Image (cartoon, rainbow, N blue to C red; front, side):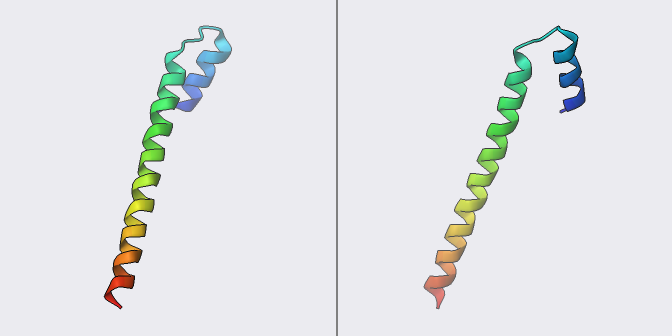
Length: 52
């Protein structure tokens, strides 16, 4: 995703709502990745504790 391009589009006045949609998709993907990492970390931690 090209952020400078979207920012230029906003300042030029040809503002479009799909810019927000792009950011929304990006952030949702980012949040999903973080949630997955935290879940895998928790399961890994509990698994290690169970082995002891």
